[in-house]
Image 1 (cartoon, rainbow, N blue to C red):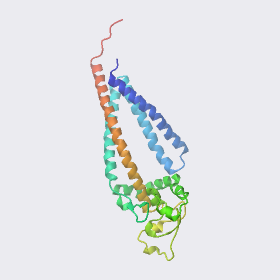
Image 2 (cartoon, helix red, strand yellow; image 1 turned 90 degrees about the horizontal axis):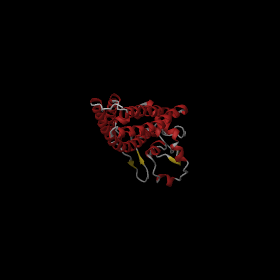
Image 3 (spheres, one colour; image 1 turned 45 degrees about the horizontal axis):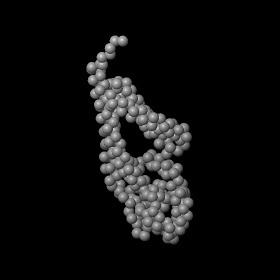
Image 4 (tube, rainbow, N blue to C red; image 1 turned 180 degrees about the vertical axis):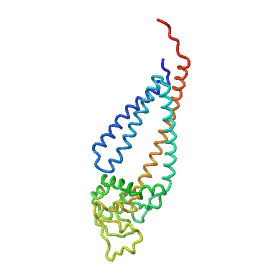
Length: 273
């Protein structure tokens, strides 16, 4: 009878194998319908994740249930590398997202964001033109600012609205510009406006063109980083739970590998018919 640890490894990896199929299918589906940089950017990682889970789960099933020590050793080696990488990423995520927070504005229900408040590593990611082109494509595809404009708020409603970091940074000019509110994404410059007297360069970057708005502003990049920071904090917590699960699976796999070696070293006696 195959031992309990071998059965557990088999069952866990069969579940992983089944889960890898829709992930891989989603990546292929994205590849066929991708028309924007945002969708193309997601395609590669999704397919890579699906293929990785598929191959690793197959190695685990064959190695555990068929008592193939070589495949099971390869499976444990990959699992060990994955645990180390996941641990390093979790620590890294907490370190790089430790800095940066929105700045409360007097008389406003929303916060404003400054790029310089975030870690240098995150700043470099959004200041890279190639990376920012992808971010901007995702923002435009997501119609974040269009959904804000559809609220049709009065000035009093707008200043008391709890805008998201991206809406605050990308869909309106900074409060320091003192532009005149027309609607959520359309602002006019005051009489006597002089661009050389404005301390915030984002005031000159702002455009009422709905395809431009403040997408190239430093405040928009800061808003994206604020959103990434919040998401990474959540991902880090999930990673800790997943890390514990992987360690348990790795421990069970080590037991199965030990069983395989014992079975190979001391083959069971089979009586003649």
